[in-house]
Length: 247
Image 1 (tube, rainbow, N blue to C red):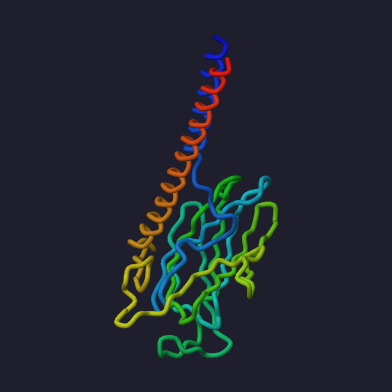
Image 2 (cartoon, rainbow, N blue to C red):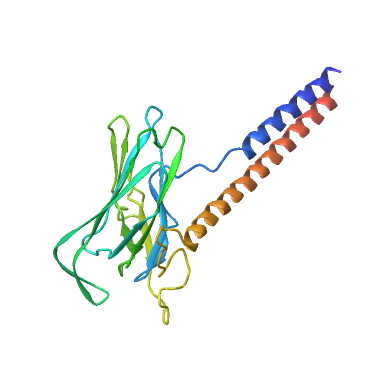
């Protein structure tokens, strides 16, 4: 009788463990990142700055992104987010730069999201801030240094570029990987926001693409959780059978 009770208790523990694994949501990236992060040179990009809160004693109340001046962006739009005020700053460049065959003397320099009273990214939470940028420069990577400010005044500067060895630094800057434009490609290829013009409110089909990528990731993690739960259950059943044989 005691062996049967032991077996029942073991199965119950394994079942709870399996439910816990399957019920665990996908964890946000450990640092500020761009999601999705691959686009085409010379096109446009619609993506989200994914910002996880990494402190257990304070929430995030401000995000400031520095935009490049050497390869200026001629178009910047933000998607409205309840509880957050977005400010896009535009200023004169130190010297004119040619973009898409045109001389540019001023460009967007920064984007800042500030939490309104009562709003913050809380402990164990993350938030996504959508933007549409263009025209993307003709280079492999576009770094977007970002400062994350906590309600206690702490500022974390995510601005480091990858090392020469390709290793990720301690505080990596959000980055977009830019692929060369293919022959006959006008930038309107529909991959993650390439060459698109966002609507006035900042929403478009490529934001749905970003959500789809997140959903697929969640499904993969859920499937992995199911496999782990099933494996644990199999080990538990085997242990029970071995115990009963010894008895």
